[in-house]
Length: 164
Image 1 (tube, rainbow, N blue to C red):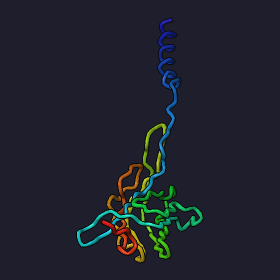
Image 2 (image 1 turned 60 degrees about the vertical axis):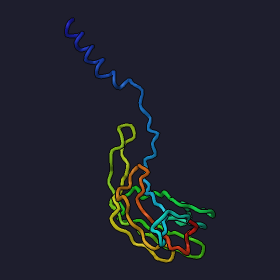
Image 3 (image 1 turned 120 degrees about the vertical axis):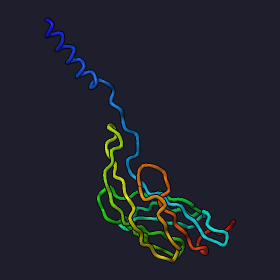
Image 4 (image 1 turned 135 degrees about the horizontal axis):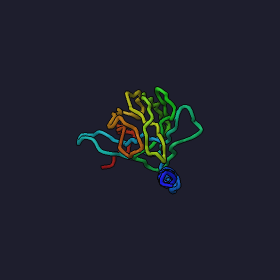
């Protein structure tokens, strides 16, 4: 009898956690790069607006990530979930266009037991055109699920809204 009671108690402790409500993951598990637009002038650097802005992936030109006729000062865009070595994007402003190539490494990172894993990226280096873009600097190389600014895109003053 004592043995049956011990087995019953053990069985309850084993099954009890599995009877609890399952936590549903509501978190977006796509890591997105955050980029701000800046301009340099005589007083230093400041954030700026870019008008007539179109932004899309080279691999999916039919899927625009941004199409803004009014000014935009910050963008968020996903990097691939696969272990690609680089990703290319096109940035258009009126009749001008630049391609941005982001070289990165991808790895999986545990978000939580209910959500699973997310692909995060380490930015390694950049290549870009120079019709719209003056320079791009990597502010934070880790692209994860946070809203931290990863890239600072310095726009040529003739393209940017240079109003103080």
